[in-house]
Length: 424
Ligand SMILES: [Mn+2]
Image 1 (tube, rainbow, N blue to C red):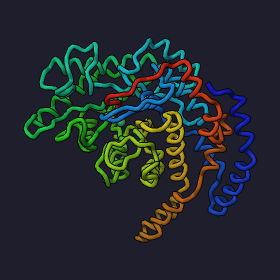
Image 2 (cartoon, protein in one colour):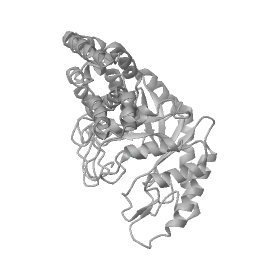
Image 3 (cartoon, helix red, strand yellow):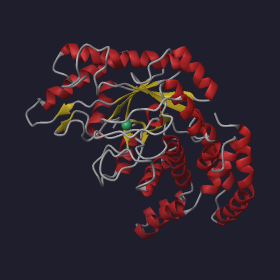
Image 4 (tube, rainbow, N blue to C red):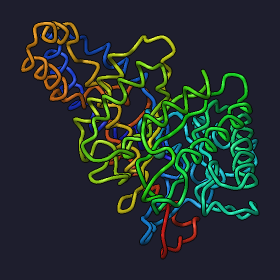
């Protein structure tokens, strides 16, 4: 892991500059009537879950180019997740993927405790075939024509819940790749009915206090029609299933230019927003690092969430879902967690009283300027001070590089082979 003495030494070299920046920002915010201390406490209370699968190098359907010291199994992944949380103090939980992370639950719990993380929502997988599943998901899973395939997919989801329950998780995220590649390939109405009926079976298996998230995605791997292709389908699903069913919004699962923050607002209105898979995209489901392409959109999503704080029943699961193809995944995940936290803190300093007044007066220019004033504020000193006070690193990436962690794990983890398609 990362030596605490190294973190302290790295922080010492940056602390005087940080305090000067923090005090200057505090004076600036004070003139705007904002208490920097309160924002720092909000930053400290922030947490986003790291995806276990994000700690390995991803890839596209063309190829995967692994890096040094790739994690071999869930225990190596948990080590990496522990490093990410130790340095950022912003990623207290890990989101698992079954079957990729299948192991003895007691061993996973012990490892998680040792590295200082817990477990977030569980993810099932019926978008690929499993070695121990006799039937294929080539033509679908929960919506398959054959009852036996649907039953196998339902059973897998119930098993994923069972594993999660032993780990202290309390949510299951279901994303299916079901759909068609040709017009006429399937009856779209009946396919959706089969999906709903399968989801109802999974819903019945939710333990007390659990929730099920339906995750929509516009296309891929099905390129003509996708069973759960949009938030409308996801909302219908959640409404038909019941109180424990919510919608999960993956930022990359929409057509370019779709107003995602408005979808967020609508799902909050319906009482059905369950959580997020954060990432960024330029063209489609790019799975790029959060905040690297359109940080303003990330801010606008958070603006809706901060505005809705206190809404009864609003309890969100925040997770990262990214594929790191050309960077060290630990560095990408640390930066991404901090970018999501940044958007949250920026959205927290929107002058909501002034904004409501401008909206009342139809002053579009000043309403928009009020949002941008918050977005333009450099809150880095707040994030860095929150990390420092919580025991993390003022500069997570530079501290991580100074630690030599990647080179050290590359000594014990055998070189991973690249080649064909990777995780998309
Ligand atoms: Mn996702």
